[in-house]
Image (cartoon, rainbow, N blue to C red; front, top):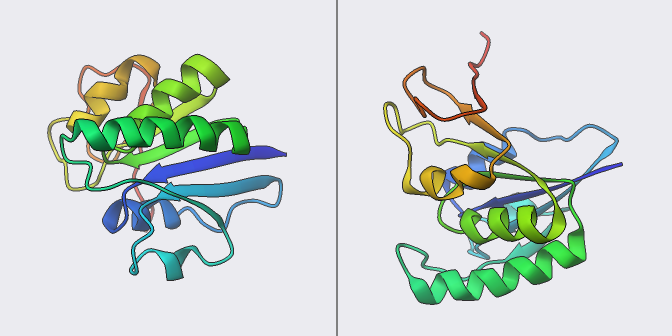
Amino acid sequence: MTRVLFVCSSGGHLDQLLALMPAPDDVDVAFATFRKPDALPKLAGFRVHGLFWPTNRSIKALVANLVIAVRTLRAERPDLVVSSGAAAAVPFFWVGKVLFRTTNVFVECVDRIDNPTLTARLVRPVTDRFIAQWTGQLDGFPRRSVVRRSK
């Protein structure tokens, strides 16, 4: 069985990852996100690990989420960490790769058309695959795939 941990902020980033559900039968999924009223109903039936917020350029949030990342990764032991952003992904990708040898996949958010987000730039060294939804996204990033929804 493959164990996947989705890490994201709530709102649109969470919705983007939930679009990948339901997972195949041989995939076990857990989420790490903000435990906000808009997110919790969407995550019914999943294991959810709460993250500290707000994360916008906050050292305090980064340190708090670093501790949460170590605890969560130790508990979940994921094979794959997937994120669509935002800043909460940074400690999970770094701790996951360095301490737990996870495979990390970053899905750049759909509203970034021609340049990478700060989060994408921060996780670049420890990301195994970048998924872009626009041709110009993540230009110059290694291990980049562009995907489009079929009609």
